[in-house]
Amino acid sequence: MMRTFLSLLLALSVAVAASAQTASAPAAAPASSAAPTAPASPYSATVPVAGTSDAQRSAAIATALTQVLRQVSPGFAASPDMLSNASGYVRNFHYSRAPSGSGLQLTVDFDPGAVGRLVAQGGSTPSAAGGAATTAGATAASPGTAGSTAGAAASGTATVWVGGIDSTHAYASLLSMLRGDSQLQNVIPIGADHDGLLLQVGYSAPLATVLAALETPNGHLSQAVQPHAGADASLRWTP
Image (cartoon, rainbow, N blue to C red; front, top):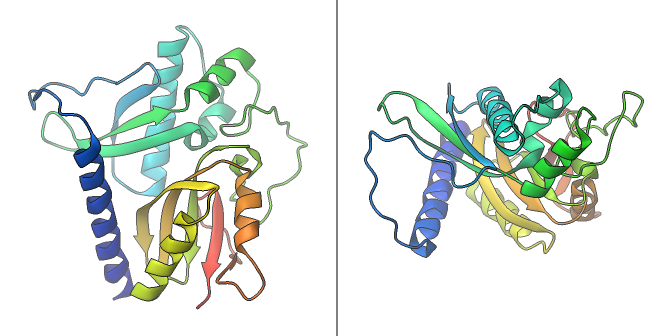
């Protein structure tokens, strides 16, 4: 029941966000439904995606990053480490129906600065959206980060999982808290499962620092005991 409830809330949130973006966007000339979607810039790519799960989206984002790197620097070959952190370089993304009418495609816009640093650093392993090199001996990620380096970046986009969302009041309170934080932007629900919610957030200070500030004594948010697969940070909501 809770899973259905969260899915309905998620669908409503996405619909409201899409309506707001449509209302504010300038009118564009109608395009043929049979024509493929052209990327808005060399830092954007549209690729097929098998579905909307975390793993399927991550795989598609990695493919999109490979395409963008080749557009920006022909002949550039992304390292496995770069592709494993691909979600950390994303500015925004959206799903759409494939031009053929069958299946989905994912359009991904990457942060130009992060992509530029990737190209400049060549085969090094930068932290997500931050450009700082890391090594195999780097400090281990804290619990809840699922091994991502997004929390160390000064700014960027990340996915945050919050469990314990068991009512409309908790859902509304969580979004109000996150959207009221001056260091978080574009807090968008992108997935739900059982009593948990997956959010895409933009941050203007290290993500770990921002989230730690929200975990005040007697507050509603705390670190989750177990990290959520595919999320850069995992939290727990307590009424």
